[in-house]
Image (cartoon, rainbow, N blue to C red):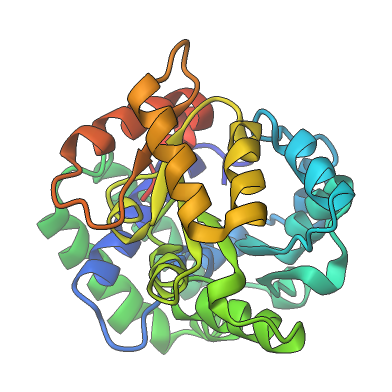
Length: 308
């Protein structure tokens, strides 16, 4: 969305709208459906699949991600990626990490097929709505955001040809992430109690909750308030590879082994933006954990830390 002027601001507002619809549990809506809602604006500004592929050519990985994935694969782990991200981006990034494409679940996105000549009416509508959305930035007024975007996405847009484009995009978030995990689990004949899932946001909470409830290990990494309550444990750190000792303990002694080392690390505390571990299973008050993760999330994710 940053490829056109004001696109980042439009995305932040629509992302907040995504949070609102998820929290109110709108029927049929999944967290992460933002990636469908922005399609008309990508078409309006002539963004094509090749633009996404170009962005994926120079990825900026989370610190320690390449090191951790390499270690996992060198120690007989199977590594999967379940992401809301468009396929043009996700498949190239996971390829760079050495994750097999058959182990990746992402959002199919035939963007080039969606491009069409907008009618003057559609063009005027999208331009007006884009201007209205920019007036809602920063996205602090949930009531105004919902009123304005409900009218556009539920009344005005469905009456247009370009509105039909949204129905073709099914982002892998929420229940769809859990469905992807269950497919991988069935294919590999491994129950969820044998899995570790790592997530950070509102699109991950159902997956994290399912793995934790099954007795697996659900890890919230640099997470927000939507993911942390559903995790078994958490890590706030500039390096994803700080999880290595926990994963070794899990590999040796399962959930009990992981809990033991996490509690030890939690007692020792973190330092220099690294190593803030918390065992969350059974914990009632996590406000202090949310605050630690908010700081780490901002450092690690920069502008993206503002998104739900």
